[in-house]
Every structure is written in C-alpha cells, then in structure tokens.
Image: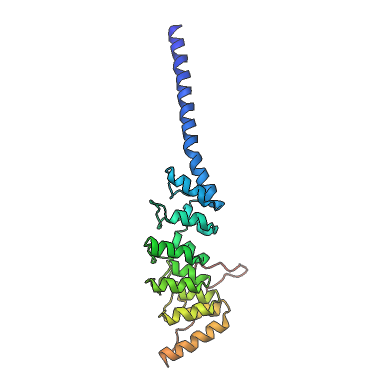
Length: 247
C-alpha cells in the first residue's frame, strides 16, 4: 500500500512538473508570436519594445521567412526600419527560396530600406546565384539598379542557370532598365545555360522594341561580327503542354 501511494505521489508531481514546463514554453512562445504579428501589421513601436525585451530579430515565420524579409515583402516599412537597426540582425539570412532582405527590397523597389542596409549597416550587395540586381532589374526599378551598380554590384551577375540582370530586364519589357544596364557595361554576348542571349529573351517574350534596340546596339558595338544565333526552341512532345522554364 505504501509503495502504491508513493507511486501515485510521484506521478502527480511529474504531472505538475510537465504542466509547469508547458506553461513556461507558452510564455516563451508568446513574445515570438507577438513579434511576428507586429511585423505583419507594421507596428514599429511594438517591434522595438520586443527587441528591448530580448526577442530575437532573426526569427522566421511558419514558412521560413526571416522577419526582415517578411517586413520588406509586406511593405511594413516602419517594422523593417526597426529590424534593420537591431543589434543582432542578420541581413544575409535567407528564406527557403534563397532570398535575403536586400533582394526583397530590390524586388519591391524600396530604395530607402536598401540605403539603410547598405550605407548604414554595410550589407553585401553581391550574392552568389540570384542577386539583388536581378530582382531590381526584373521589376524595372531603375533607381535601385543604379544605386546597386554605383555600390559595386556585379553588372553581369549570373543566376544558377547563368541568367543575367540584363536578360531579366529584357524579359520583363523594361526598356529603360535595359538601356541603363547596357550603359553601365552589361555584356550583350553572354548566354545562359539554355544557350539564350538577351536578344533571345526579348524575342521569346515578344518584346519587339527591345529586341530591335539590342540588335542595333550590337551593330554599333561589334560591327559586322554576327550576333549569336538564336537559341533552339525546346522540343515539346505531341499533345502535351509546354513546360515552364526555370529562368
């Protein structure tokens, strides 16, 4: 009987201990949840208060997006500004797609946040694979493109399959961005792993004015040297839908 009572007491104490541990976990989780919500709703004051209480600025959401990447994507500018200046912020931290804070600012055309990161926190403008310059060129954000180039961004940065910012600008129909990149020294001759040049990109995406301009630029720069032959079109099996290309 005595042993039975002791076992019951031990079980009860263990349950109390587990409950206490669970309670502590909930208390610890709450500030992190509050931080995520504050970022989503662009509540810069709450973000600042939570940072002062020791909440990690490098937390991620349930999809693996660092809070700063999330803030920039959602255009939560006040929250982003606070996070950028946080003591322990990791500006190079990426989401599962390999996107960091500078890339997201470039995609959104958020020059102010970019300046805070580069001028204020010395963020690295170059990145192996997809880089901030690709993202700025993709959406035709000329002010961001110029800023990045002026801060030593590699003009012919190559994505994992060799696609350059110039190719992305041509694909998107951003004629002024194409001109800007060419004036800054982008190379017309480069091909990606599919064998496509920037002229191929312009033609494949029906950017006729850009394609004509690129051919004219080629003639001025390289004279009678023939432009690269168009990349062969991928073979599509009969009765099947064309598959998207990973540019």
